[in-house]
Image 1 (cartoon, one colour):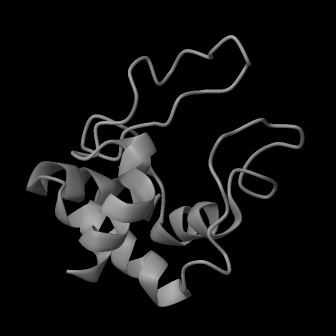
Image 2: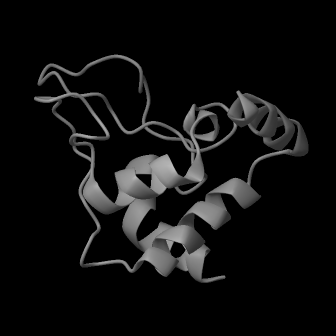
Image 3: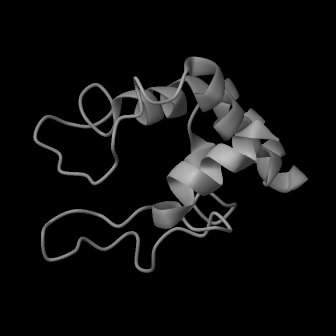
Length: 111
């Protein structure tokens, strides 16, 4: 699966090999930045529509994906990954969520 290979090569060093994120991902570090969040069922990635997630991967955590001045270690992958590759990474992440999370996501995104 291309998405898994790209995730392992480009994302796992920050977001974890098992999508677990960095420890204390909700607590700002001394530099004011938040650690990389998990992409597993324990995180909040599943709260967002795929279009928003694709924009974050493509552009990084800058406006319109974050407020002006927001400091983040999330790089932009535009120019490095194609839209199809980004979509494949997101499909891989989603494939790791249990059925109950997928159902909660579908319900949440209806709103």
